[in-house]
Length: 164
Image (cartoon, rainbow, N blue to C red):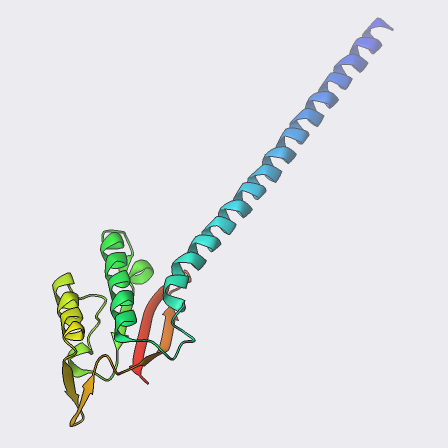
């Protein structure tokens, strides 16, 4: 009789231990999933904030050359910040293009600060450029955003402007 009661106490102890381990695993998995969901939400919010800097131009038809210079500077600063990261070209590089102007055709987001300041000086002086045998003023021209492309991670990788 004495051995049977000791066996029942040992069995009850083992069952309680298994229940405690099961509860511990359940809590570990539940809290792990919650932290993963929170991390994913935080990443999505950061991605949305990052992309918003560029996507604000997508539905506008009153973009000036000042806006383009601003977004080019933003892309330039972004590219300098992430240029040493692994996978920079695929994940972090942002390209800003301006169609319709031969001397601004290149990727203006990649240009040096000196070249961007040169464009700013041209704008400040209200100089004109010659395209298709007509003189056009930078200040009088408005632009539209014709294309925004995203990379595999959902980050903006290209924003392209064209004269309206």
